[in-house]
Amino acid sequence: MSTLQISLAVVGGLVLAGVVAQSAWSSRRNRPRQATPQAPSVREPAQSAEQSGASDPLAQRHEPGFDAEPDLESSLSALTRFTALERQPALDILIDALAPVALDSVVSGEAALAAMPGTRRVGSKPFALEGLSVATGEWETPAIGRRYSAFQCGVQLANRTGALNQIEYSEFVMKAQAFADAVGGEPEFAEMQGEVARARELDQFASGHDAQLSFTLRARHAAWSPGYVQQSAAQLGFVAGTLPGRMVLPARQPGQAPILGLSFDPMAALAEDPEQTALRELTLSLDVPQVQRTEQPFERMCEAAMALAASMDGVIIDDNGNPIGPEAMEVIHADLEQLYDTLDGRDLSAGSELGRRLFS
Image (cartoon, rainbow, N blue to C red):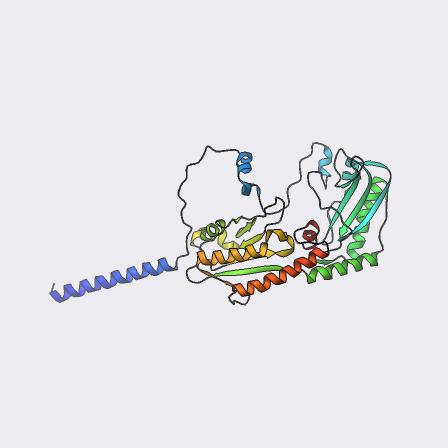
């Protein structure tokens, strides 16, 4: 082999090596960012769920959902629609149409539970029932072992599906009447047109004062893997939600709605190899009427968005793809303060029981 041939072979090898290196570098550059492996830590012997939950407040928090009803020992468990362990929101004339049910004699909780309607909804509106406890003199959800001197049925006047209409009110009347007949009571119903008018007025107020905010965080350069997003969000206090691709920032008070939501493509979270899935966007969301003002949810939303943008090399954008800066956030904050004041003035404060029911 001549010197020229040897030189050409060497040059060809170098070029081939360069192409391979370039390909590997490009592949590594375009690979989604991965979560940093956590160093193993020395742990105490395993504890029970109750013990570990008591020492870790986040272990006790979860996104609100529908809990399974308790298993009752009596045969009435199959008929139970409401139980003492499953607390229902108190009926309130402010957002509910009420039908008092007068009784000639005291009715047991067992009889009330057996007379309950099969569903807790009237059309798209929640239906509820309360009994006046002989023991405490207070309204409560009917329960076994209790005795009641009166009842009241209620249907919510409005929610995010709209106002209570005439068909729904008629269905409410039939359900309440059937319950009253079963317990030997006499219901009293308000005039339909008046209640429907109240429902429309409440719905107009709610529609004009509802606010659900969101920020989109978009990757500037390298995409993110689901694990990288989850690890970055967890450092700010987010925990796994009930759905794939969703995390939440829990409220300080147990039983309250999450302060913020964080979501990304659920299909990425369900992929066979999630860490090879490329995410370029995630969404931070705030359901304003569901979260107490004292939690400072919008301030925490802005802080979380800016912290994630800094740590993940992202940019905060609006629905039109335009960057959102601190100045725009201040304007939104000022508008939210006015909204909070208005809701407070109507006794429908953000995060309150009535506020959460109306804006649901």
